[in-house]
Length: 235
Image (cartoon, rainbow, N blue to C red; front, top):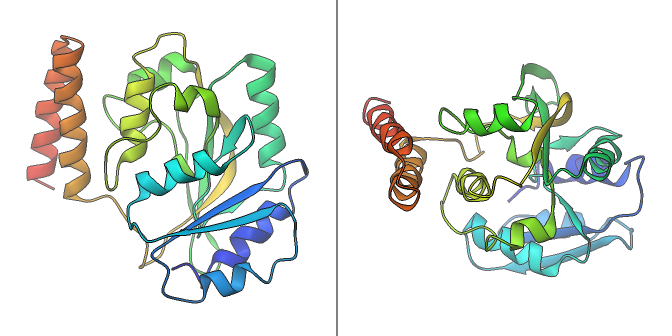
């Protein structure tokens, strides 16, 4: 239900400096004018799909299944991409053989006004360390190799933290390379109707940590499992 912002999101995608891409739009449980608005865009690169399952991980996997490219760029229906986002990220992946490339983000309000910024750790080792404390990659800013994501089964868990689970599972393989572009390539919108992190996210992340503690026989993950429980209880 993105009728208030989807036009601006789509315009930011269609105006990219890199033009050889497809736009796979997965609309789930839509009850407003989002579909009507999207159908007004006259661009053969756009392909629309609709599902009745109101769960993000399922719809992300559906989008992966429908996509034909080797590289996937993620964006949410209320965010916006800078003019050169796709080119910068694709060059970074190809030139450095990265698997997952995110970026810093600018926070914007309902009127597209910048209200803040967030920076993320740049290199692979810093990102892998950060995963224990907080999510080290902005999901709506990310581009990744499709085969890398499919290699771990795609999205599997979480109602609000499905990306956190994905990064953790990818990090089991030390050959997977992460990177964050130190530029704001995505504008992340802050508004009342969006899905924000809450106690559920702490519960989900706690589950990921105890799973990894057992799976990897890791005392470190067990410690941060306890930390996540503490954060969730006192949030």
